[in-house]
Each structure stands twice: as C-alpha cells, then as structure tokens.
Image 1 (cartoon, one colour):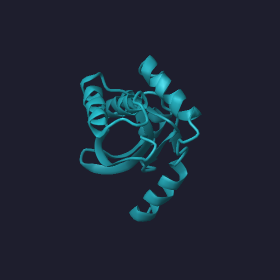
Image 2: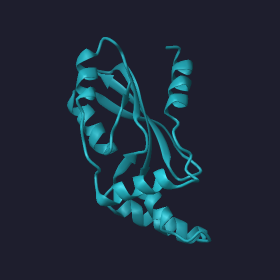
Image 3: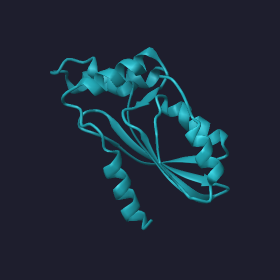
Image 4: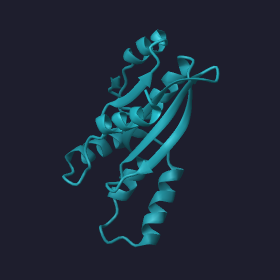
Length: 153
C-alpha cells in the first residue's frame, strides 16, 4: 500500500504505537541529496512487513544552503551542524508499505494516519525538492518491485 506522509518520524512513532516494532534496514543517500530508507516491521519478533520511504531531511536542507563550490570541509561542517539540530524528515512521495494480509488491524491503522509537516523548514525542503529540476523524482514503484522480487513475495 502507499501512504501519504509529511512527517516521517511522526509516522514511525505512530506505527510503533500500533504495536509494531520498526527496525532500520537499508539506507542510501541519492545524488540529489534526498534519501531512501527501508524498515523491517515486526510484531513479537515475527516479520509482518517492510516499509520504504524516499525523503528529504535536515541534512538535505543544510546542503542546499551551501554554495555550489563549497569545500569538503564546509560540507562536513554543514552536515555536523544539521546533526546537532532537531531532526525531521519529509517524504517526497508516498511511503510504500508491505504488510502481511493477516495484519488487518495494522493496515486499517496505517490507512487512518493523517499529519502535517514537522516544521516550516521541513515544508520548505519538500517544496524546494519538488521544484528542483535536478531532483530524481519518484522511485516508489521501482523500489517496491525490487523489494518484492528479492523477498520472493
């Protein structure tokens, strides 16, 4: 299923409040400074699903504020400063969630989720990403097909 989310960390907390353990999986930073992460979903140590999000976060905005000719040192300093600030993440496309059909209460709970941007900076980063002609764009369907092909589901 696909879920529209504006506050990634808020959504993860919401899923955990539904009784699901959310464990980090693969993570990659893309060439446009957006990120893709996966999370394993479990209930009582049993795998029930997987979640994939393509998002921008405070690191993305820190990098956007730099000049195009910033030195490696300036880039590292900007990323370290971003780590010291309150963290937020905003998906740039719907989150992909695969959940076992047996978990109807989880599916229903996820489909009821509604939220807002975690901060003005988060909304700004989202808008900048969506309006940037150099942004990679949407990856969700490709990522879901890949995940399902390697999991055998």
